Amino acid sequence: MSRGRSTTWALLAGLLAGLLAVLPACLGANEAPAGASRVEIQLLRQVRLVGQPTGSVCVGQVAEVRASGAAEQARLESLVVAEFGQEARQVSVGRFEITRALAQAGIAPASVDVFGANVCQVELQARGCPEADRESPAAAESVATSVKVGGGPTLADQLTETVARLRGVETSRLKAQWRCGEGAFLQQAGDSKRFEIVPRSTAMGGTVRVDVVDRQAGGGAGEAATGAAAVRVWGSVEVLYEAVEAVRALAPGQVIAAEDVRLAPMRVSSGRPAGLTSLAAAVGQEAARSIGPHEVITAGMIRKLQLVKRNQTVQVQSRVGSVCITTRGQARGEGGLGDAVPVCRGTERTILYGVVTAPGEVTIWAGEKLPGAAGAAGEPQPAGAMQTAEIKES
Image (cartoon, rainbow, N blue to C red; front, side):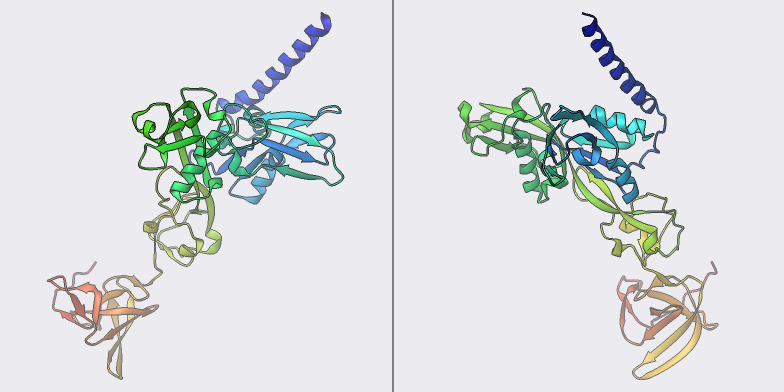
C-alpha cells in the first residue's frame, strides 16, 4: 500500500512541476510581441528511432520545426521533450510535453504555433547505424484525437489530401484541423473506395464544409445530395507560403538591399498572400513608405528606384532624328527608369514631357507617344509636347 501511495505522489509531483513551468508563460511571462511569431512546430504522429538504445528525445526528432532563422530553428529542435529508460521501448510525446519544454527554455508557448498530431508515438529500435525513420510531414497535417495504430493515413488525412488537390498545392503546405459530431469517425483508416468526399464550400480555405459518405454504411453519391448516410465535417484550412518581410525598419525612399529582407513562413486561409513571394521582386527597389521590422512587404509598399526626384535639376536631352541638344532643366515630377516625367528647360515656363533614361537624366524624343503623359482629353502626349501652363512652385 505504501509503495502505491508513493508512486501516486511521484506522479502528482511530476504533473505539478510541469504545470508550474508552463504557468508563468501562460500568464504572460516572456510574451512575444503581437504579430512577431514566425515559429511553427508540426508534431508527427509516429516516429521510429533507429540505433538509439537510451537517452533523450528532442523536438527535432518528433516534429517538423519552421522558424525564420537557422539559429532559432536549431535551438527549438534541440529541446528535450522525453527520456528513454533502460527497459523502455516506446514513449509518447504530446503537445503538453512540447509546451513544457518551451516554457522551461524561456520561450513563450503563445509565440509558437504547435499543430499536427495530438500525440506522437516514439518507438525505439536498436540497430548498428543511428538514423531516424519518421513518417512524412504530410501524414501528420490533419489533427485526429488519438494516435493511429499502424501509421496508415486516416480519414482526416484523406480530407486534407482532397483539399490540397482542389487547391493545387502540396499536402505538406496545408495546416488542416477537422471536426465532426462523431468523435471516432475521423480516426478511421482512410479509403477512397469506401469514403466519398463531397465539398460543400466554394472556397477550399479558411472554414470549409464537406460531406463524407460511407459507402459501407449503404450511402452513395446519390444519397450524399440528400444527406442520407453522410456525415457533415467542418474544417479549418490554412496554406503555408513564404512571404518577403523586412529584417529591419526601412525609411521612405530607402533602397532595399539583400540584407534588408528575408523569406518568412506565412499562413493564409484563403487566396494567395498579399505580400511578395520572391526576394528578387524587392531587392533593388525603393521603399514607397515607412516599413517596420518583420512587416510583410506588399507590391504597394515598394516602387522602382526613383532616378529623378521632383524639383531636381536634371540634364535634358532633346533628340530629333540624329540631332541631340543637351540643356539643363528642372523635373516637375519623379520617376524610375523608363517612366515619363514633366520637365522645364532652363528658365522656360513651359512643361515638356520626357522619359527617364539615367540618374538625373530625361530624354525627349520628338513625336513619340508617352503613356504616362496624358493631355486634357486623356490621350497620351507626344514626347516634347508643350503645355503653356503656369508653373506653381512647390
